[in-house]
Length: 84
Image (cartoon, rainbow, N blue to C red):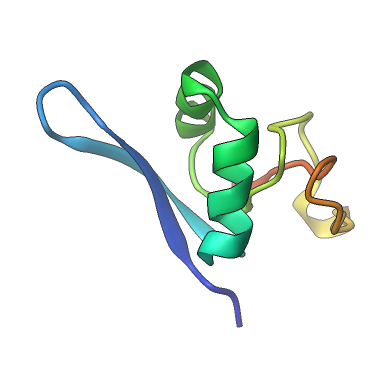
C-alpha cells in the first residue's frame, strides 16, 4: 500500500494548484525530492504533467506504465505519471 500525497503550489489568488501522487508521499521521500531537485520552473512543469504514481528526482522521458522498473536511487530516479 502506497503513502499518498498531494503536491501543490499556492497561486497568487490564494487557490492551490496540485497533483495527486499515489506512492512515496512521506516527507522523507517526496518532501526530500521536491526540496533537493525542484525549483519553481520544474515544479510548474511537474504540475502540468498531471497526477503521478511515483515522484522521482527528475521528470524524465515518457515511460510505459506496465514495463516501468522502479529506480530506488533518489538522485537519478524519474517520475512515473498516469496517462502521459
